[in-house]
Image (cartoon, rainbow, N blue to C red; front, side, top):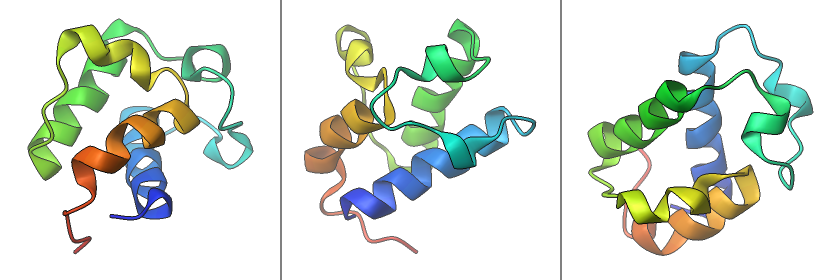
Length: 86
């Protein structure tokens, strides 16, 4: 997957988790928690969705890498590079 495809996938997951949020104005450099009404369970839902949809394993010690869209895409890019978007 390309970085743009990974970003789209994260947006899709965020929309499922928080359907009332305005994701069009999301700032990729700002932390998700500063922009969206996400709690720790929502954050775990993101991790679980990535595992369910793409079998991407994210160790708990790496959760900090998923703070913003930019850091999430950067972290996931090497893990998802061989995944073909269906």
